[in-house]
Length: 324
Image 1 (spheres, rainbow, N blue to C red):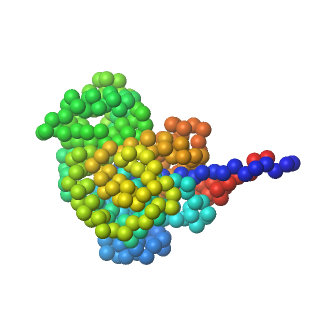
Image 2 (tube, helix red, strand yellow):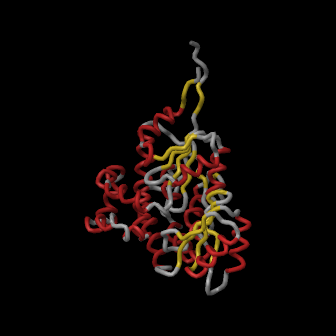
Image 3 (cartoon, rainbow, N blue to C red):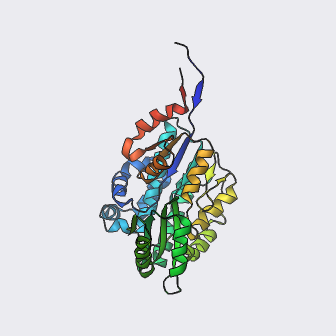
């Protein structure tokens, strides 16, 4: 049997967002004692912010609705997963993170240190929750495209009932952010106009829209003096859905994307165009794995939570496989 040439497997690593991940997060936080070995900064942060009562409370469903609690836990889980992959010689060809996942992506590509990322993420969560403690949130609309959803949004938006597109996850999978009243109207009109799914998400913050501009401004101030390094691999942005190779451009994306829609479908498409043949989603998510499977049937996608680290490393084939 004759051995052929090696086929390179380009691995894209996806870092997850907070929305709809509260149940899976319980498992990630429950193993915090294991995760603390990843970086001394984790141990320090947990010592100061995640005392035993806090960690116990994080396992309670209601507490997991707190963006202040969830965001640092997502960062810890994502970075721990990425470093475990790299320890198995799976080196990403590109990284991207949905919403808060962008900070994990920035750590993984070497632009942002983990020690700097943790307090930033904690600040981000505090600012977001303080800005809109109640009366606002997100809703998912499926079965209508971006132009259609934007048309409804523009018709119902008022100063008293603000609403905006927040995420474009797929051509007909859109998330909107706004006041409770505006979201109720949006859901009703979307259903009337043919959406096969229109419902609230278990998130109380209207993220990734102009309502978050004050949060973005504060993050820019907090990041202005942080030392950043050029990325060691392409970092695919939230805000523009394009590959970034400059540390300052990544700084802007991290600080400002909270006030702009996440163009996740564009980001996934860019990673595919960059040559990704395997998408690996970090703990504790699997939403993007399902998205990739639906959008790009010829490309493999694996969730660490669902299939495990060993399965992901076997698929990656330590970056290459041999064809007979």
